[in-house]
Amino acid sequence: MHIYSLYELKAAQTAMLMIRKYAIDKSSSHLLKTWAKPYEDFVYQQDRNAHEFLTRDSKKNDITSELLANKSLTNSTDLMSKMVRLIKEEFHHFEQVLQIMTARGIDYSNIRAGRYAKQLIIHMRTHEPLTLIDKLIIGAFIEARSCERFAKLAPHLDDELAKFYTSLLRSEARHFQDYLALAEDIAGEDISERIDYFRNKEMELILTEDSEFRFHSGLPPQ
Ligand SMILES: [Fe+2]
Ligand SMILES: [Fe+2]
Image (cartoon, rainbow, N blue to C red; front, side, top):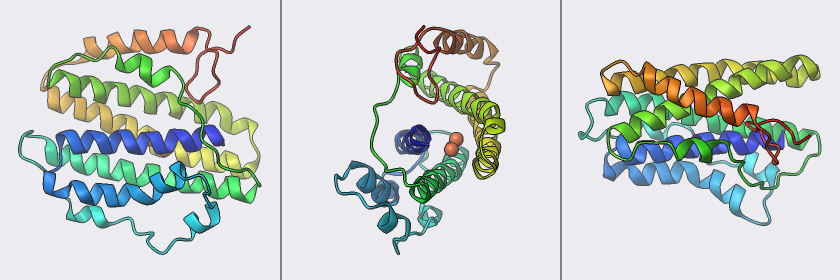
């Protein structure tokens, strides 16, 4: 459970960074910060209280209707609206995981991210728009891999968790398609070679030994 709560939050934060950098107008930046604040406060404070967090009054998820897209990228409105929906869902997943953890008496504590995303990011090209296209392709792989793992895990879990993982899986499947569609649109040309490139890197991470156990980790050490 733990590992997923980290994953959901990272997914939301990554998407937020992406739209701050590429899709929203500077004047809207503070709206995103306000949106993320309760989650970040909860995660980074020492004396966190899950019940307080889950029952807070400021629980409104619609401030994003006021976000303005910037004009530097032709696809910024599309990027913004797809990512905003994704962020909403990931924050919601985070709360759902926390709810289940709380009900099961599992305390939230932070864990370090594993090697997976870091090792993919190092292969990003360093000039735009290629960096953005690579980021989106990596996003697609992360989401698709989690989708696969939820599907593999669900049959081994109790009913409540199996149902929950299946609901997550549906939404992660949409996320991976959104990332891929954005990468293709922004590239404006065939990107299958680049997808293959990351597919190979990703496969290596999944199939080689990994000392840390995380949601996207490789094989456990023998
Ligand atoms: Fe999620
Ligand atoms: Fe997702």
